[in-house]
Length: 113
Image 1 (cartoon, one colour):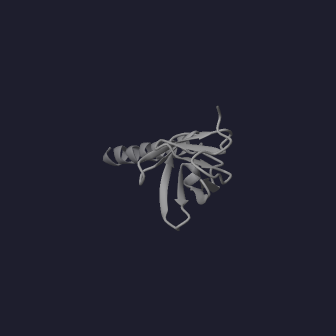
Image 2 (spheres, one colour; image 1 turned 90 degrees about the vertical axis):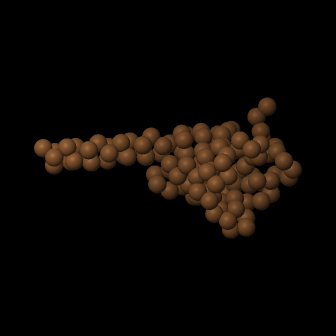
Image 3 (cartoon, helix red, strand yellow; image 1 turned 60 degrees about the vertical axis):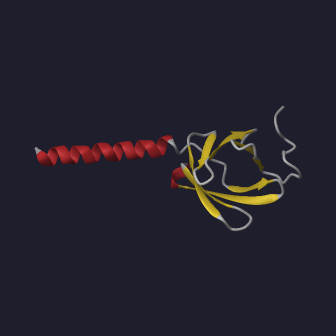
C-alpha cells in the first residue's frame, strides 16, 4: 500500500509538471534580436518555450518566464512584457519598449495608435 501511494504521488507530480511546462510553452517567436532604442538585446528560448534568456549589449544575461503567448516576465528586473503588433514590439511594465527594428528616441515608430 505504501509503495502504491508513493508511486501514485510521483505519477501525479510528473503529470502536473508536464502540464505546467506545456501550458507555459505557448510563447514563440521572441527569440532573436530586439532593440531597446538603438541597443541590441538578444533573446533565446529554451525549455520548450516557457523560459528564455536575455543578453543585453554589454553581455549581461538574465532569465525570464512566459505566462502565456502574449505576456512574459523578467524576474531580475521585476517587469512584465506584453507582446504587441504581431510580436514585433514588447511593451514592458516599466514603460520601455523593445522592437524588432532599432529606433532612435524612446518609442518605436510602429506602435499601434
